[in-house]
Structures are given as structure tokens and as C-alpha cells.
Image (cartoon, rainbow, N blue to C red; front, side):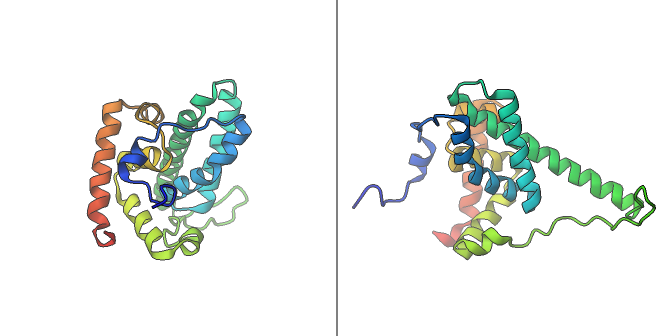
Length: 196
């Protein structure tokens, strides 16, 4: 059996340490853009908010960290994106509370503002484009994870960061990363039992 055709096992995914470093920051951003969008969209459940989060994170990386070594770009970028996603989630929650109190309110011209409604969390375009059912089930299972478990899973398994890089991106200890990832894997196995 061709080793390239064989799917990666869980242990191989978690211990993948040899990555080719990009030659420039532009190459790094081009390589991480699509994955970052999927991560942000899964967290936020809204395409436009996800695009904003990724764009803001890329701009912040370029503005503040372009002189850092290439080996540091990945944990820096994922840490910036994580904080941006959390900011957007907080802003959305505050907005819903305020709009709920005000019942929509009026803008500066006196026109009535619509009552804010949370983003539609139904299947988006990516869900329909991908091999529908398996992607949707996996995404739903990941969304059900507690936030820190979800972050650890996405950074370690989907992005392939090592434990130290993930700890820096999540602003926690390496032991916490291992604990969150272990719990996430256990929860996902339970939720996706039918796919075994």
C-alpha cells in the first residue's frame, strides 16, 4: 500500500513536527488563508464575520510582527485570530443584549433600526460544497466542544502546531493544551460514533 495514499492516523497528526517554513510572510499568509477562514467560520457561524476576523488578523500580523522569524509566524497568527474571534463573539453578545433592551432603536437620522437577530447557524456554502454529510457532522461535533477544547483541537490537529506553539497561541500552559486536546478527542469520538 502506498504510504502517501494511506490516511494519517491520530498519532501521526499529533506528532507532525517537520513543516517547511515559508520563504516570505506573503507566502505564509497565502498558505494559511483558507484554513484560517474555515476555523473562523466554524467559531463564528457567519461568513462575513469570519472574513473580517481573518483579514484583521493578517493585517495585525503584518503590522506588528513582520520582522519576527518565520518559525514564529504560525503561533502568532493563530493567537491573533483566536483573540479576534473572541472579540467578535463578545461584541455580538453585547449587541444582542443592548438591541434587546432598546428594541432596535433609532439611528442618528431618526430612522428605525431593525431588531438585531443572531446569525443564521444553518448550513453555509462550504457545508453544501463539501462531501455534505461527513463535513456537516464533523463541523457540528467540533462546534459542540467547549471553546478551549475546540481551540486546542483546531490548532493541534487541523493546523498542525506543536504543543508549545499551541500553548503560546492559546495563552496557557502546555499541560493545559494536552488536557484540552485529550478531552476534545474523547468528546469527538463519542459524538461521531456512527462514523466508525
